[in-house]
Length: 266
Image (cartoon, rainbow, N blue to C red; front, top):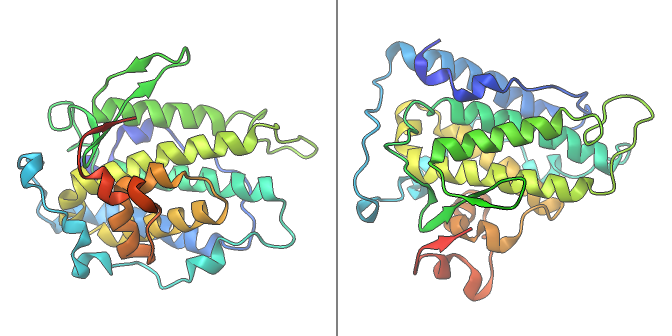
């Protein structure tokens, strides 16, 4: 396997939980296709050099129609994200959340060698800068790879905790479960948004943009279906959401237009 496919993410093996039959096919296709493409990417494709022009000169290549229309499947994700009648809501949220964690982790792994402390000195998405908050609530300024490392470690700890994501018969989900799922989705959105804003050219060079687009569409539509992401949180990528999903997440002055005017901190 080429170095570009051996991430820090390899340190966070996905702990699978039983996935309900409904809607699992799209996840399996994405998993298998991304894994194969990851293996192939180091054989014959020219590797990107990881160098980026100044932020002011960056063009949002991911919005160009020829790239935005790329998918690995034509599944109707709006139908796939709907809660099946026979499935418990928390179980549906748990199964999808752990699977999205696995796929975001895998997608990031393909460009992790280019996401370095030198190239990505802050966890930035367009004009928004994210900070990590430790267990005591202290704001920590960190590089993008450090932030992603914090995200993956934190989420891994949650999804493998039987008290939070129970897998054994008779175990109940905690009362705070939906709030924790929203927290995880917010973190995963930050990682996806960073891949688009800072590493889409590398993703394009590896011919993995179709996988990234498919993952983003599925994730955003799932989050919309169950109100897992605040529109203000996703406003920074409203232009991408509009291009891929046919509708932005923000409305009013707090949406994408406002996000472009000045640097924000979160």
